[in-house]
Length: 207
Image (cartoon, rainbow, N blue to C red):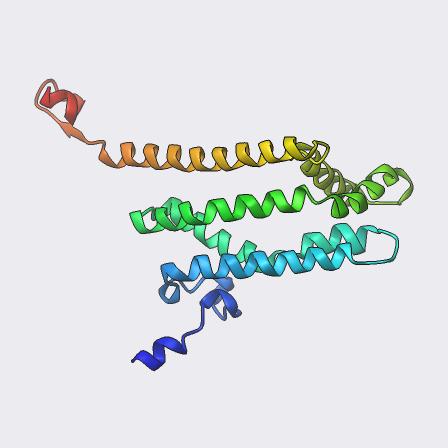
């Protein structure tokens, strides 16, 4: 039994041979999420490093499209994690999300504060009118460029560190707010009274 456990493969690391690509929920364990997120972050970091390392002139294909194709594993695991945590928000799932958020926030900051990556995106953005892009390609380019700007790429080192602090705080506060709302929703009860057939809050009745 111990050997079988050691040989177990994280479901996120393999293709899902399921109808419509539905996640095999019965095979996924809570520990699989963080392991897959860590692997997904490392994999996307390597994919972005490969984009930056290119010696050729930036093009939509070798920079923007390459970025859009990156992070497949990370998208796979976070898509399951956040959808499931909203529909089946057990304390254990909430704990997984709380552990994952700081990692994902830092990863996002590392991407959109990377000056080498931004230099390639900016070169394309500044010459976008002459690139012959489709409307869809232009929208993707502009969205990516704004992501850098909005995340503080133009700030100095102190400003970027402050931005990182704000992003970490916001991620934590958003999760706490969501958990509090869920807790209040789950604790709410309605009871039918014989007082004119009205519905009343159970807490109000007790008072």
